[in-house]
Length: 49
Image (cartoon, rainbow, N blue to C red; front, top):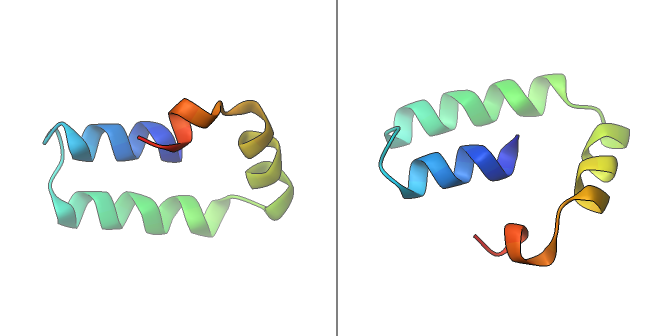
């Protein structure tokens, strides 16, 4: 989810305020285990975007 959010922000599909609001929502709802699983599933190329 974070990768997609970053991509949308980079493509100017959402503004900074919307990016920050959605990021806050993600951080409030994602557990450490979910974040670790997502990190393991995300390729290095995706992380660098």
